[in-house]
Length: 479
Length: 96
Image (tube, rainbow over all chains, first blue to last red; front, side):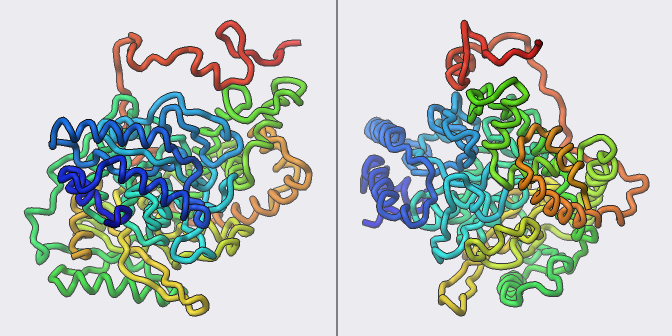
């Protein structure tokens, strides 16, 4: 029996019926990682001992009772900016290369209670800054569909691990598209929950008003199971909120569903192949009876520049904690005074993109520039959110592309920061507005040179806390 | 274009030790990004309130009491630091 491509539901059934044990399942994944991950490099740490002991616990549980949680025994991978107690947590940065997490993130505590098996920690762009996973201090991850291409980022390791069947599911984090864009590039389901739906306690902060943890999974159903397991208010994160359960679609038939398509997301110069796939997917919804309506989000063109003020500003403040003293990489030995420790540890410990964004954010927040940059961006953020509020007065959900292109080649954009930033053009507005959004694989584009089939995701955007609705709309397409 | 002196000033504020080659490279890169975000200045923001979070953020209050379950062993944090003594972090002298 092939154990590596089972859904969560299939794993659950298999364990209860004793078709296989949790230990067998866990071992088969660990073997597969050993064999296949050399080429892909999705994992930074494989936590074999933890995984095996968790699997043994689950098997004990099954021997006592057939009533086990749905996620018990399901192997998963965790982005390496989420703390798992006693495992290394590097954020793919030299400055944290030897950092051992002293506690569990809230999402990890919740998953452990469900009995998941943690296979290891996955690669990312350093501190989640990037769109290709090339900004990792420990080397890039490759796209399993074409090893010459990037898996997207920053949750590239998580997306690649799920796509290559090196994990049943994975957790990622999304600040400006970091779950949805790699999900699109790797052909897996990726959910960025509403800001506040999932606790950020134990997530290494990038931009605190934008960051959200979410699942990368093989199917919509799997994504839903994981989201339900990790969501909810947490006293340790004051921005977390209880997800309202009144937001189900169930009462609504497909004939009553009004889908908005924002005209600003189909711009001149867009890859025609991408447009074809996305338009084709939207047409399928029309064919089954949904009403398609063009909407306008007039401030769309300002979302990316707005994001590239707000994100670096928040990041520069959040990353001030890496000082070469409390933990992490330190140039202490070679430094003369305390200031010298800061300058040399941070200068050496942070990679190029991280330094660039710290500089940008420090500038935007500095005296004389704050109003022109940061305050202006915060006001435009209000306008971007109002655009969505207005659109949602007449439509239930919004469909759009996730990315302007399929996965690009390794090295293609790494030397041009601005062109890398532009690959987030369709994903950042959702974070600024705090909305939930899904990336659902809906098609493939064939690369003429290599013949590889490159997946592409459709973005399904919902009103705040309507994760269930966007998941159900996604499920309609899967059917 | 942002000047070399400005880049050096920002690096100082950010506590980043950068070589002169890195300063020069950043001068070009930051200028390009700042030109791009210049676009934001065309938006009419008269009367618009700034937004820091997409949700209403409220403080969570609790009793001022230690949760023994969450209490970490002091040593666990100090182990992560490179230099500690008698339960304290040890740093280089700050005052002359």
